[in-house]
Amino acid sequence: MKNLRFVSGLFLGLIFGVFLSFIITCKSGPTSQAQQVPNSSTFIESLNNFPGSVYKLTIDNIQYIAVSNGTNGGIAIIKHK
Image (cartoon, rainbow, N blue to C red; front, side, top):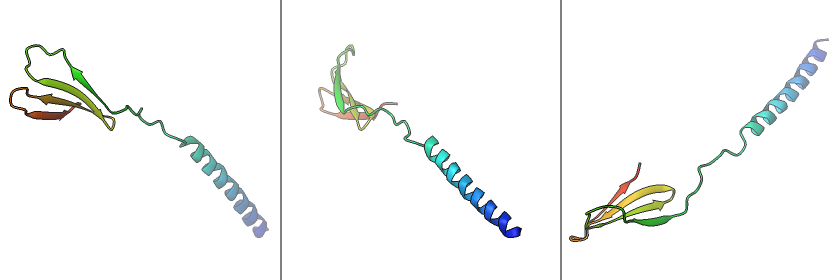
């Protein structure tokens, strides 16, 4: 009688384990990733009375602002938040 309970418990445990692993893999399917934005650069013209150039850069889904001083040739690149 003890063997019968052991075998039935083992069988039910295996079925429950397979069922549980199936539910977990179905729930944790492909996660939604952030939309990939192509690399680009845009010249910003709407700044008043600024002698340099300002560009908005998108590289590897990260946005940067690049500022170039027109007179001295200095460049600053800042990560946009």
